[in-house]
Length: 315
Image (cartoon, rainbow, N blue to C red; front, side, top):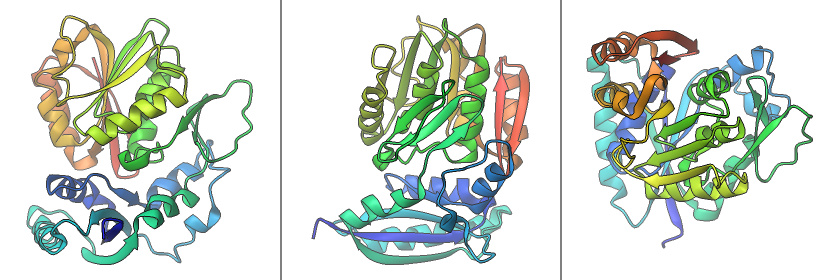
């Protein structure tokens, strides 16, 4: 039945999230949900407390494992997908990556269940000084200084709650002004580009290789009334962006290996002195990314860290 899906759940550790996520995407997954308690515990401990989050979400009875979920249609060869994923995850240990339990389990779900059940955990929350991320189905009474970004991540799974996105949003708040041209590479749900537009950017372009992500991003652009400033387009990294139109800021919340690849070309899309904000980087990959940036003419000006993740800002 086309409305029946297999929910694939992988139990692992934060260190392995980037690699396992990459495995899932490489084998055809269209999106992932990451349940990492360190993300929420870290943010809940700082001044921007998650006043609106469902406390039941934090009740894990001391379980610090990370759970990565993806959904595979029963119309696909689910057994083959699972076998490949299991083999690739087990091979990560050979590269010194701690996968923890590394277990892979499945359960059958109806489309309407997996499409909506996760929403109970996603509540409005504050990032930086002004930005408030609000799911479209939640009520939020905004303060005068709030810039509210309304998001329905859909299959793009970009909610802003992960540490990598959190750091990118805070960095955009620092660098965006009303003259900024901003490119969001791997835009997902469009959240980073929409934040830039809300902060007053003059023009924003989001780009993603996934058609679903582009569709969701453009829907979120309309929800936030920033369509005069921002558009989302389909493309491979920055290939579809006009090189003759330089950006003041490029943000890429992807993965370390892709960022290393992107550094070879990204400077040609930036104005002189432009800012490159990159995230999705595990700590073990910081040196690789900073070395690639230096090799390609960038100076690293800041390295931020939250939990297991890093955000690198360069000019």
